Image (cartoon, rainbow, N blue to C red; front, side, top):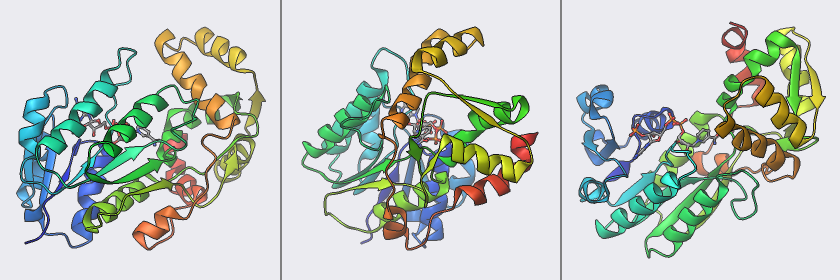
Length: 294
Ligand SMILES: NC(=O)c1ccc[n+]([C@@H]2O[C@H](COP(=O)([O-])OP(=O)(O)OC[C@H]3O[C@@H](n4cnc5c(N)ncnc54)[C@H](OP(=O)(O)O)[C@@H]3O)[C@@H](O)[C@H]2O)c1
């Protein structure tokens, strides 16, 4: 009998891409379970034969029930980035629920260099990895570098103003396509492996902020000046620009971590898992040019 493969947070952007990637790999829809807080959002997948169940990690018992009967679970990290430890509690509840439901293998979406990273929420990922390792389930840990799509958060404004404020210095990032991460998750989930492994998913080249700015400028025809600041100056600028106070330490920590090399991995792990090369940043910028300039 084929393994039952379960994807959590399946209505999110990454989650839906994982469902697409499983189907594209030829996994039978009847062998896929998708969990979400809002099953109505997955009606089109239910219509294709995927079993959709409700699971909110804030409800540990309902999550355990939703996991019952599944052999392998892709645990997609949640987006609960408050300062009350919510995400940590959710992830630990999900790991415990998987174990209690008899899941054999868990695939988890983590963060590069989770042990040392200055990204403010790195401990959530490290503690989740530790819980998974201690659970007795076999595991694949996929440490996802920043998605190329994250550039929609700041590049449109940078292209309008012509200035990119940064405290990332000369730190590089090999931004990766969200869809490449999804394919890697699907590959790990469907592989049947029970080997324990940790991969860091990256795009195919490492670029500093200056290099990304030059590439974006070349592709869009808009000039970009990178204004290099200290972390404190960056935080002050964000406050003056009206960024909500609670978000500022998180956003600054991204640049600190970049500067200190915690997001600077460059691997061929996407290709190892999926069998094909990941999308380049150039391809992302060319494909997204109109949307970035809109
Ligand atoms: N590497 C990166 O650059 C990067 C960037 C952004 C985020 N991330 C991380 O990667 C995850 C997926 O990214 P995305 O782009 O798909 O984000 P997204 O579309 O915002 O999705 C948020 C995800 O969190 C899940 N979630 C939230 N609260 C939950 C709860 N109480 N119980 C169970 N699941 C819950 C959602 O599931 P349902 O809505 O289906 O319940 C959904 O899968 C994010 O949640 C975040 O942890 C990584």
